[in-house]
Length: 154
Image 1 (cartoon, one colour):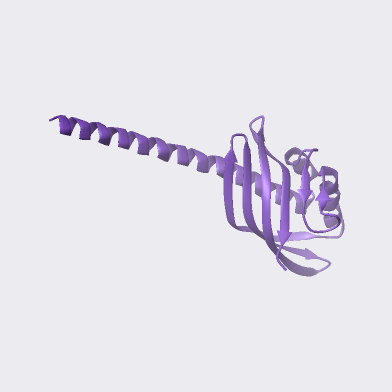
Image 2 (tube, helix red, strand yellow):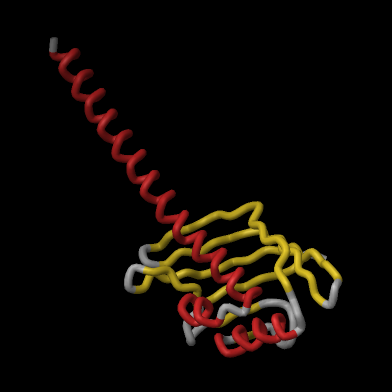
């Protein structure tokens, strides 16, 4: 009888624990979905020269590291690059993130991704692939993207 009671308690505690873990994982996946939507919005806003969205999601203290120039850029540089891309008639054709890992640390999240984008510039299409590590910070209930590092595959 005592063994049956212990077994019953163990099973009940196990079921409750599994249920709580599933709920937490579901909530994290939903949070990650919102985060990944913001990530994609930043990339699309850049290629569309959507300065309002970029200014909202890429704060003034942003630091971006990547190929080109000296590799260091801030919000003003990013806004200028987006305007230059559009002024040259640049158009985003395709944007994909074939692989992404998300790590959450309270109100900070880091994404590690592979990316692919296809653009059209001066009537010619080109595909760029690479990797990105992006930092996101939850501020006033919204994700912002104050930093990233990208590299391109040759």
